[in-house]
Length: 487
Ligand code: NAD
Image (cartoon, rainbow, N blue to C red):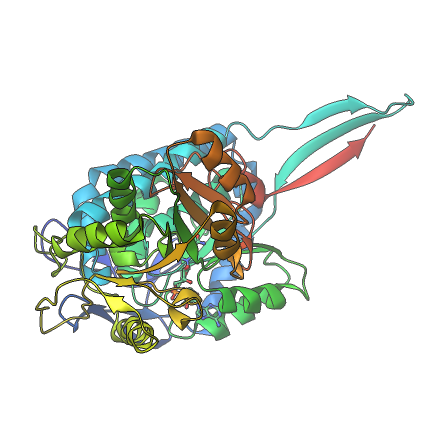
């Protein structure tokens, strides 16, 4: 086994590779090194290899060369490798969580939750690798047997964002490898080390050379367009912003590569007139503050019945005031920094715009650490319906509240967005909540709960939030072609 050039980081983080992972080997990149910033301090603490288009072409050559043999590996064996990788991650649970904290700013409890969630995709798809089934039927008029079989789509490109650096990778690599596809993972440049440590775990778990490659690059656009221009690549699965998703879908069109798109959200969190306020506030805290609001499934707009809005906003603001904001490494921290200065300024500008348009900030002012990219958790009451913050994906710990008069108005407001990833509804009458859930134009709905993600459930959006589903029994289908054999 080729030994990677590793970085020694604070305990409990295991030695972490910094190279590119191509054809089962760790190597230098052809571009100048990429610095990795700790968002809690603003300091660059590591440098990793940077892939150019030439490196990417080599990674594709390796993925293509390994494809046939990997597809022929029995499902049980593919599953056992994924299972070993699941166990490898769980063994290094604390180390992965600390690394995610270091490069992404995620506090320990959130980071541990991501590791558990992320590892689970490997266990889930290890179990799915042995259930890739075909079918047999006879044509209604007789004289024809209809056989169906599922086969891997071929080499895949998997592009992931910075906000869940482990889970977004396992949610794609798990099903791709379980289906018998080879994969090139391109993580976000802000959070490359988690993906590289994950690749080291996969290598130790026995993934054959070329089946998984990892390319960190500062030239994402050039690398991915070069790979998509090569028709040997058969699929791109992307998690990230809607504009980049549109671009990649267009780039996949000439070669008709299959696409899975997990894009932005603008989730409504609806508190119906009969909601239990304690439950709604507890749900709002999770839906808003998990990962400091930097989640595609974060509640973005709080739509609250006019009778409850004042009380809900006050209670949410006092719960937010009680939260400890600080560096990810501090054990008391509940909300960490925003991932980088650009994102922090974007969030601050959205808050400033809402205040100018007449909204009130309800949280008490608090001192924030001087270094790093911190934003104070904030509730914005009486936000006008046309404020830009309601149309943007906030990606920060900010909760704008809008009042409504009845369920019909709430549904119209909730659906008044180009996005359709997730919605949340809180109410005491389950029938009423289910009716509301049926009316929401989203791929997912949480009823009286602020988190919906689970490896066993189909995750994904409609409208401008994406195409396809990850996780659940359908997740592996994104990586399988259906073949019909007439006999
Ligand atoms: P982003 O679109 O800027 O980047 C995502 C990935 O795409 C990164 O790896 C980045 O390097 C790469 N990339 C950027 N420009 C590219 C280009 N022109 N061509 C090819 N690749 C390119 O998004 P982000 O800021 O890293 O992540 C936040 C976004 O991700 C939010 O919109 C969030 O809602 C979304 N997201 C969606 C889900 C989901 O499952 N629906 C999950 C997490 C995050």
